[in-house]
Length: 286
Image 1 (tube, rainbow, N blue to C red):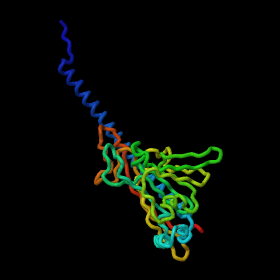
Image 2: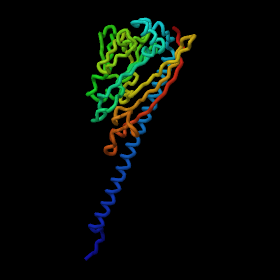
Image 3: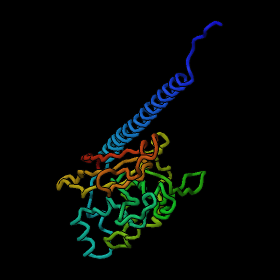
Image 4: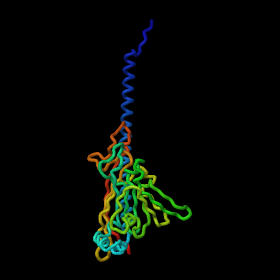
């Protein structure tokens, strides 16, 4: 009888186990690399887009007109409001942001007020934004600012799912519409804010399809400094840009992506956030 050589069942089983472990290890490494790649792409997109917004604001604010405080404050109800406005460098005609604590972050209602929408008016162009808090959760849809504009031949259009709009707004009428009547005080209600644009040109979305998963979470524009002789303004501010994934919470301590990783590639892998500063001197004419 001829003797045959081969592997025993135990040897074969051990070999199969080794191959299986090797394949699982390779798969885990690939998934980890994929997660790291997605995280890198998210961070790069936030940083690149944030710098583009800084360049955009620097360019348009630099072209803006001088701040004539007296002209901007003239239509207020009485001398007291006028004096407040002039002393404040007409700040309420330049910037305002609304806040609410009736917002969900994931499944948790916030304990403190977070930004919902805001406006920044340079006198030539104005910016209107909805924050990521109200864009990613339909429960907060009534806190999204609405914009109504009329383009000839198309009729009136109302939008509320925008992220960051730029519109021609000579004189900053968009910011003025936030005032409570003819007083120098801001309307406090953060919900159902509506802006009606007088320009016939459609506003431009600055966070378009290429950055459709990004949103502003907070934007602060500080009271502009104004040259006493020329009236030219010096604007400075800061904004937080982040992804719509990862349950971003800018009030959190530590990790702002509050949604923990769930698996190898999760929403956490697509979560990124950064804060940007801008400063520009307006050189436009009155």
